[in-house]
Picture 1 (tube, helix red, strand yellow):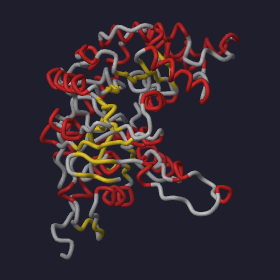
Picture 2 (tube, rainbow, N blue to C red):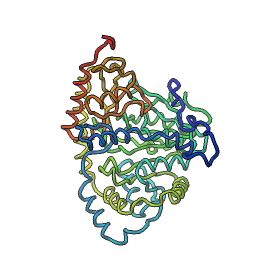
Picture 3 (cartoon, rainbow, N blue to C red):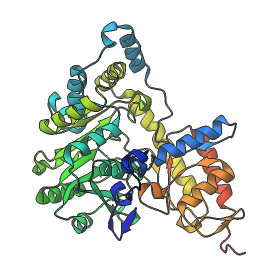
Picture 4 (cartoon, rainbow, N blue to C red):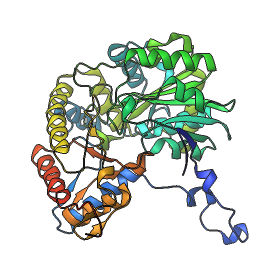
Length: 428
């Protein structure tokens, strides 16, 4: 990865070296040989492996609600599984009734008015993003990605030959990119901007005025916008979802929206997301999906249909719990030696600054990067966090508060006890 001041370039293709030997001698392609695994899933996998080995590990790594999927959704899936008509392929782009329900739900929740033909049902939100990049990017097209970013954005863009250009934000702007930063990063090769609000990993939420300015800039520059709205219902302190395509009609049809049931309805394992956009883009992405994966599992689609067609009462109950945990985590982190944490307004993550701990001796060890500090933390107190390097912002940790209250308090208390041992001079 290469970081260049307030913006930079990142990409698989930039890191690939020409393999030696004949094609027959090469085993793994250069493209996939250079592809990084998902850092968040890797941290979660390590935590689960340690738990399976009998370790008392507390994992803050995965962005996964700890609640069960609401019972009416589970019952709808069980009933669907018993009906033989659901034991067959569906159309590659998704069940027609689910696409219609997604269109209605989108109008209800964000005010965006679309037709069912503008919806592609995908294998989770990650698949929707990959399909969007594949449908819109040609090799060499640049994608502006504000950092901190979700780990998949740059990798997924680079897989199809796109060139991720990282636009670094910090706490001074609430981790929100400014028009001035986007303009500084723009080149004639810029095709797309990735826009995520509420944000993973920071929980930042853009105001309506900020969205208006970014939309006007994108329209003037002719830049497509990919708006990731997966955390649309997880908002706190009076924050509200402001859908960029709704607020910025001047964009015309140069936008796509990704979303899914995973975060809102505690359905990460069901693997249902969707891509919304202009009909020609959706048709192209559907053609790709028909060749790569075909349809999403029929039973999962039936469960998603029940979710998006139902009310939001269970969602509001989960959000109230997340809000309570958010406040507890922020208070505890800010009471921790060497840690400062801004209060997130959305999603279910805290993104504390840990730079004051770097270079200090902690229980006989010294971590010079947040990645090294994360390793020290899991080794010493069996707490799993994701370092800021995974999100393009070294010096931070991401901690999910989508876990039980007791584990949350115990996990942060372990960090407090560990960091209380930090010595200012590593040589002392």
